[in-house]
Image 1 (cartoon, one colour):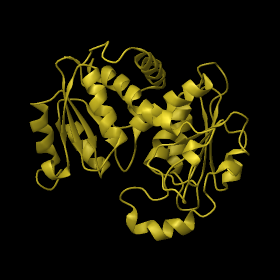
Image 2 (cartoon, helix red, strand yellow; image 1 turned 30 degrees about the vertical axis):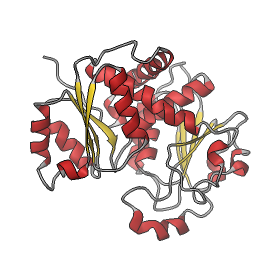
Image 3 (cartoon, one colour; image 1 turned 30 degrees about the horizontal axis):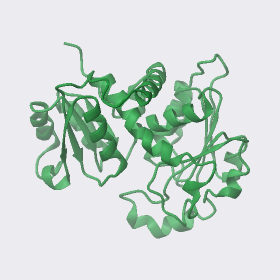
Image 4 (cartoon, helix red, strand yellow; image 1 turned 120 degrees about the horizontal axis):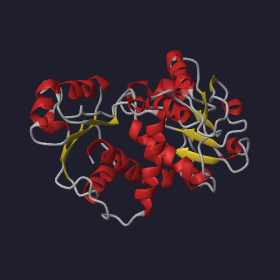
Length: 310
């Protein structure tokens, strides 16, 4: 029996596998829903400690379209690490289901589920990474620009879980990555080193670059993609006032987009905090692909599920 594979981090798939999954997601998107049933007879547990719109709906619909069955369990039903140890939850669920999709407060819970469980575990969001979001982002960029190699991605805002996965994923498919964040909110230096090492150009061009910056205007120079996220993520609410002060000047609006490369697209993983990282109406900006990006969660996650279970 082959060893099971987990998807806790975007680095759990190689650069070549990332490209193949993007291609497969495009194929699944263009095919009639339900035309392929690689998950026929498969059971998937959706274990969510945090609320969700896009993640829950896209996984439940995606599993059904691939022929599988999903069971949703909220925080009160399981109580990871509180009502029962993570190790017990993992061992019990492994006897019922073929895969665990978990949206957790602590990344350590995911590690425990993967360590003690016998079935693949998919990270549907943790405090450390959000790899499923990154797969949808890369699919959207490939659709919008017709490629990923050689593009410049500028991320404006907090060096959070979304930024972390995006940095590691973008370089893996040949994109240059720049992040503008205030001092104290930047990504870890070792992450930039890891992203550079994973960097690969499918067209044979130079190795992608990674640039930690402070000023948004510096990051968006020649940017083909301008990406932002909330200044205060779930779990950081106690720091809200402090973060509002720290991120003044980091709003992505039409004026900042005008400084990016011609034809640049604007991305936001949602939900948006209007009046903070974006002004009202920014997700409907002519350069915005935010809703396409949200819808692509379905197709990207179907490709991941098929890869792990099909």
